[in-house]
Amino acid sequence: MRVWTISLAAGLLIAASGTATAQGRQPSYSLARELAALRQRLDSLERLVAQLTPQRVDTAKTPADELAALRAAASEAARQPDSTAQRADTGAGKFVSRTRMQSQLNPEISVTGDVRVVGRRPGPQQDNFDFREFEFGFQSPLDPYAVTKIFASFEGGHFDIEEAYAYWTGLPGHVRLDVGRFRQQLGELNRWHLHGVPESEYPLALHEYLGDDGLIGNGLGLYWVAPTEGAALGTHELWGQVTLADNAVLFDGGHRVSLLGHINNFWQLSQSVFLQLGLSGVYGQNPDDQLKSRLLGADFRLSWRPPAQALYHSLTLRAEGLAVRQERYGVGQTRRGGYVSGEYQLSRRIFAGLRYDRVEPLLGLTDATWMVVPHLTWWQSEWVFLRAEWQHTSVPVTATLRNASDRFLIQAVWSIGPHKHETY
Image (cartoon, rainbow, N blue to C red; front, top):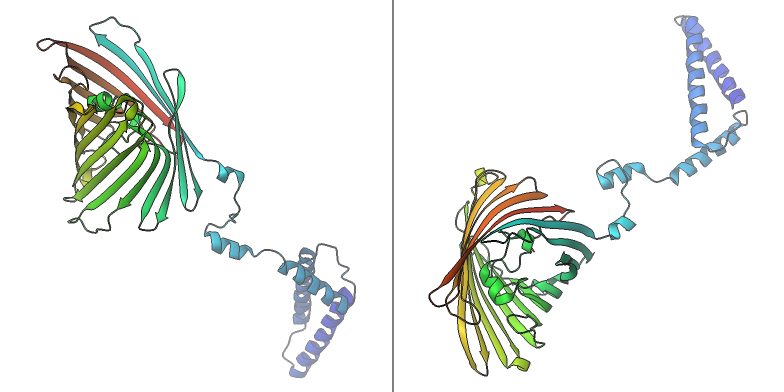
């Protein structure tokens, strides 16, 4: 290659010299300058050939050999991936694989701890440290059509599956299908996980009529949103659920099927004010105890969140009422209960609230138990909150005698993982 190139350069120099002589205007030193430029270009071409060919190429070969080497180098370069196309696809200057890596197959995992320190009046002071619950949450899309959620809790010294269900979206008619074990869509707070409710415990009415854990069912459910548009028409949601009637309080742990229906109506009254109204109904029976149970509920929520101050000031008002009728051999009574609560955001991290409960016992006296629950919550961050709460309770003992008691609680709740303080 060098011999051929030098010959070519000499020819060019001779031609250039002849031209300069003929014209009489080209200085002699320009020939040396052009020769130096040609040598620099020759060195650049040799470096380029060395970069494009994986094997060392003998540059002293003939022009035909050099042309074959250049063609081989070009063919090798054509087989390499186009990095420019890769950058255009990702938009971030690096290649992103479309294959499903092992880490992408893992579910999202979250863990929540809920611990309380409790003081009582009257005493005695015992069981003051309540490691109430540690919840483990697993969530993952199964494919483009289905998602699963699984929540296992360690409570009272044993593990329990609180929820484990899959749901499908995009079905005909914009219907969502839930299958598995889930907290049922009854009223405002039954659907919420315990560590996510505005106070440290569920309202008395849910405890009395549904048990400590609320209404949880094994079965399937359908969810549908009415195709309405605009603030005037609002948003309207409908749930229908068919589950096993095994709630120990409402159905005496039966094995038949129970039915639940819930309608939720939502309106945006202004840029700052939102109104929600809901109605619920549950029916089930347990022939072993000759029991038929009916529950009707109504819930209300009003939220004030001014857009310019939403991070620092807000107000939420809630109310819910339940009526339960249990009949054995066709005879029964209707008992009622409910609560009213309000929570005001004092600053970006501090919330103050108050709840009033009243509930008639499912069995026994018709006189109602009532409770007042003021509380103050400090959100240290989105992962941790601390709550101070006072519970003053009045319980009927006889038709004319009541028993009052107080509990003082400090609650600490913390979460790790992508889904923190899961309310649903």
